Amino acid sequence: MEQKIKNILAKIKSKHVDDPTISLDSDEITNLLLQDVDNTIKILNDLDEESLEWISSDFEELSFKFQNIKFVECVKKILTKFPNNKYFKEDVPKAIEAYYPENE
Image (cartoon, rainbow, N blue to C red; front, side, top):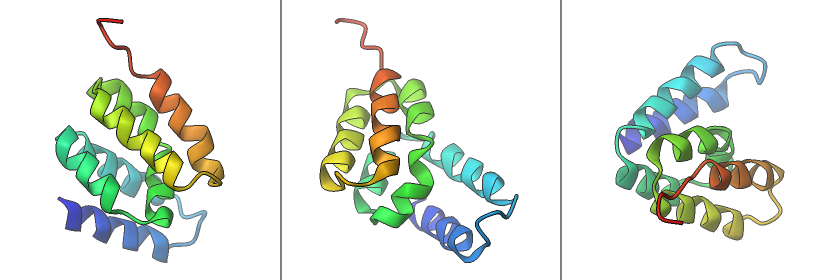
């Protein structure tokens, strides 16, 4: 799965920023990531900053659907690792808010 996501990201990066098919590629990545939270965390930890930027807008959806504290901690670490990234500054708090722990 990780290699497939990296291939899709490479395809996205080769396209013009306004290419309407990017949203289809992004949806495909999201669907792959939603398959397994542990694998998703591993993949996010392995990706570079530019690749994560293409995925970060989906952090909120992933967090809402996973409802997993390990995922929330993962995206917090991404923000810590890249504190000046404007996308992460926006997307990580949304992902944190989308997590509703039952016992708190």
